[in-house]
Length: 407
Image 1 (cartoon, one colour):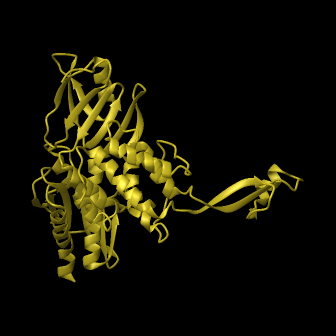
Image 2 (cartoon, one colour):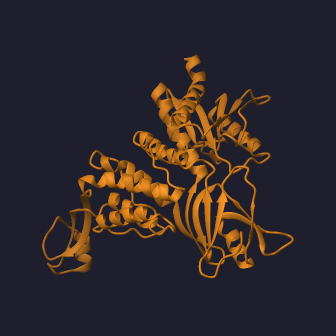
Image 3 (cartoon, one colour):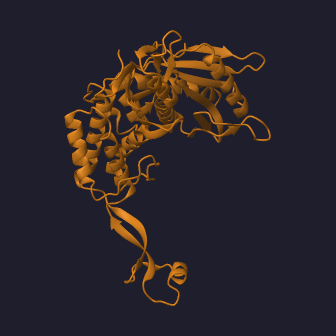
């Protein structure tokens, strides 16, 4: 692959694979250094040719524009399986069938765009959701309640204008802002197909009465209720899109405009949501993600395993999901040390490490002088969605078998 053409940015396509080799590209020294500083990919110059750079994907997939270089990172996992993991993690009840029937396009980003369009169009069939928003302003007509402190401070001795607080029934609510922010961000992604762009533009027009959120900020807070139920699936996907997009300034003030999905977070979120749902359905109790515990008596060493199941008011099982971009000697050892610490802090005889197949080999370790068992599992993400959920069911059975036998 050659360097950038004068009239268009260089496109680099990298196949994400846990054991994938680096790709050699002829770049200028400035382009190579920008890529290396961006954090989007691993990039290092060849020791023999300063214009030959070795570029390798990290555990993220999507597109990034770094200076005049356009980087496309495609997942090793099939697009429909990746969308299944994303969808299940955001809405386990509503996405299961939807993701199985996805019309998978040529790449990840067009597929995400069409999925968001489908979910948003379905949400807006009944029109834009409306709700009450608290408004504080100065008014010549009494509406709502008078803000006495502000009235005295700003208009001391005058009757009007009045500083009031009132509820306004409006379309400009967090739910619509989240949808508009995700739609607008997808429209900036290069090389979307014409149909996706047309549908996104139509959605943006429908959301015209809504205030566009500031790029780079956190999405507005919303809470699932009966009133916004038809928006739930669309909002959860829109939040995933929002988190996958962040213009970032790397060292040297080079802007890396990215649309990247973090595979590690997607995998960990899927495992946590799916496993929590299954464990709770089987045996009840409380399944707590990112459970806070302490290794020392003085509570200065804080740890947060991905999932802890509490049964009858005490920790009964612990699990941690691990997604690695590639197999690396020693990383499993570090994970085992971490899980041993979790088991020690929670006073549990057993801990579970859950990997994507190819990251680690299923294994069973008994720790000397402690008797703690640490079990490594491997999920086959290339299987069908139902088969993947079947593996989750087996994991749930193993997590709960110790407490079930003793009860």
